[in-house]
Length: 188
Image 1 (cartoon, one colour):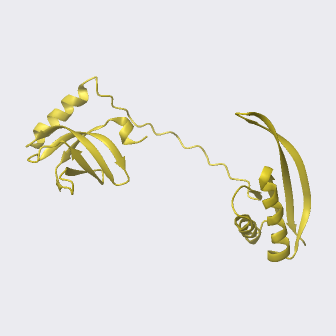
Image 2: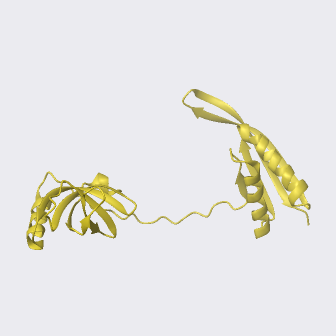
Image 3: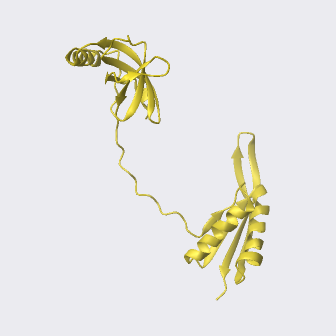
């Protein structure tokens, strides 16, 4: 959830004037530039409009000379019903499922990306790899398998090649896509 959708009110102590003559303050390690704040302000109650990275912007709701005055105004504004304040809910983390280690899905990237992925898996100690592709990526899967076998890993054999058809639903309707699974394994 980003701060822009939250419409959060904050209290800022003015730290200086930016390049574009906007006053700024610091909030949770971020530099917040305040729009429409009087130049003589020491403290500002502002509504965050956006935060990107370490920089943000806020619209001035009120400016004050004393910290107590600013705190009181912030409490008063936070109590009003028209200002919606959302509490951030921390969702419990689901256990991360371990990905299938010996499957390489072939897509639109260059063939060498998939060759490097397979070589890396074989170097880690995987004995068998399945390359899966469908549609136009079938050509890249075949090229990657042949490059692996002929140029990179000499003791590699093609265990199985399975071809099939998969029905895919798209906005234009249902289509049949060709699929291929090439299983490669090291000899010995």
